[in-house]
Image (cartoon, rainbow, N blue to C red):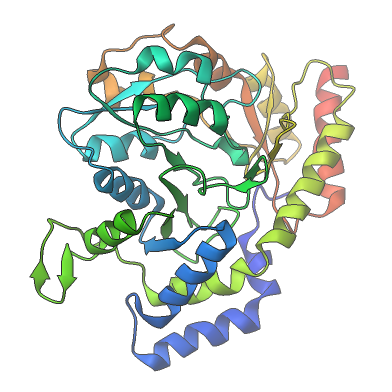
Length: 367
């Protein structure tokens, strides 16, 4: 059976380095933050071409702290998209602010900048574009609108490690950029983890305090903070993996090109499109089909797993019914939710498995 994702393969390729790093942390007795996390922060900041990186325990915490550091709180509004993982919206709710949705573009599935300005009110305090599936949103258009209104942009780059927009790294364009190190991400920990990047000294200082109980120095709490610290084992593991991220990205991009080439004749399918000014890193390779559910059943019968990212947009989730939305409010997001189907993709995936998945999809349309 073809795996959807094979985390064991990645570990085996780096086993000796990872094992030594973990044992080194255990021997050091420094288990929370510490030297390994500090080095990860510097190396990831350098990777993103920014001044600061603040390591935290999850990508959700990264979003939460970015919003708080930007001054978002109860009674405010934050604009984002409904076609995303629910954590984007949850982080807004954690601050006491209200999520306001803008629909997505039908091709890139990222924020439709043409609809953004109409959603800005006097209560709008931040805008969160989501770099979905590994492709960045149209940041120049979004930033131009945000800057005109004096509103900070916080990038949800949790699926976009190493992605680029007009040569700029994901996370480096907005006031801050937020990443997840969940194990299945392009850069994944062996557990939970996240990080925020920013060029702002003030934002970095505030977030460093907020992640560690609001302490300016030990037992001197100047803010009402949180326990959002990264543990040192994850920091040590991520430092090793970061060195391989660009090579893994090229492998993902190669698999994506192969999928798109093999599926070019399946006119009933829509394959992902990489915008001309962007570098897609294919955290997810999601095709679209009006017969998505039937297609998934065919793949399952062939022993090929697939995923749904995401079958219910956030505005129609029961947990967020209090926002008062209903079907039809965001038609492009709703159509995507009905049609997207994620295919297996990971750096170590054999080319033969890509061929097998593509052949099964073609078979579905001729049988």
